[in-house]
Image (cartoon, rainbow, N blue to C red; front, side, top):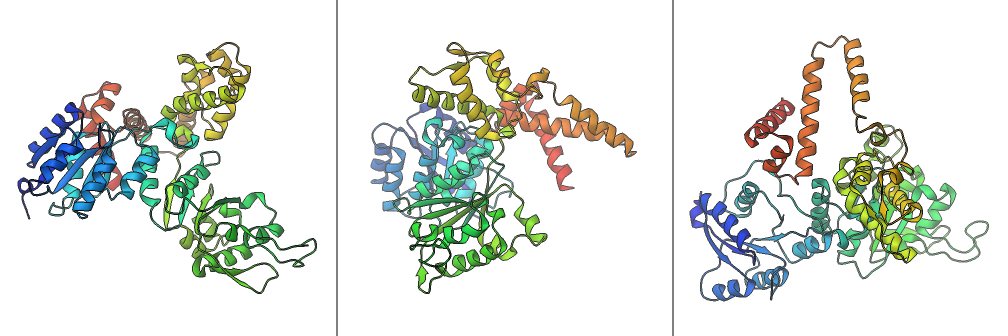
Length: 477
């Protein structure tokens, strides 16, 4: 295998500190590294010497930005792997990077160990890396996406990167998540960043249409096809021709329509209800559900072959309770929206009020938070939203209303059940789950940065790493 030292890496970033720490980390890993403070300097060097094996480039730089630099590099050498870096992991940036041919998107602030591992994976002569190596963490730009797609949680940053990649691929995508998490927002982002963006985006909630009308809504009908059909009706598939059709709550689709949908996905053609003309369409179908389609298929309530057609790639939207750190940016967004509608200055959440919102379980997810924020914007007195205002609009049977100790009651119930079952390892199992929950929360809070997570928990980094290793070994066993 080729030694890393024969691999030359260029770093292009106007931030001197980023250039320094990344250069040092890569050199310590055995790579030959050269850094530049801008795209023009790197292009000038490229004109005089052989190209590097790998390039790291920032997006936001004075003069030529990173995406323009990426285009210039790909024009000269389409096979050159380029890793795009940015502190703004919004969908537009990630989609633009992958559309331009980026090998990967590295979000700032990043863990240096992960950056080095990413460099090894990007180089064609590098040794294979562990399958569980993950991309570095990212920071979302709150103002660049639909409200459900705001956030800085690791799960949301992974979602942004996935959307950036999948937008360019003509694949069916199944979007899963609880009600209110923003599945249509993901579908709209996939369309907006795709080559179909200039064509229609058509959405249909299959659960909201009566079963006897759904076939006509999807495929259209001819005049006289049934009582009340006085003229031809063009269905959603025809309306979406050349673009994207989003089918929400696909798990509620009646069985006969599942069969018709399967044919359209396979052949790209259908008949209107009561029609004889074969209609051909070019539509990318995105589907969403809050249900377990595999379980429905096993129960005979959903066609397994249709599930396989729809589930080419799956994207999961996490519930809001799994990304509590995003509550603040989402709430600020909704309060600003309300202020614009009311033509008043936006109200601000005081710290104690925000803590109560973060502690709430949010069974209705982002949609519930949006409704609460609109009520607070309309009804809370003054410009500052206080804890008392939040308590007036958030259900009282939440951990927030119980002083933040809402976890103790379910723990007690679990312990009683385990003891009643005669388990002899109750303490060990409780301690294991307790530590896993703390580690997961700290890593989410720190954006995946282990040293900061360890500091937040009052642990040394080696202790945290050892506990994480023990957790993974336990799962493997």
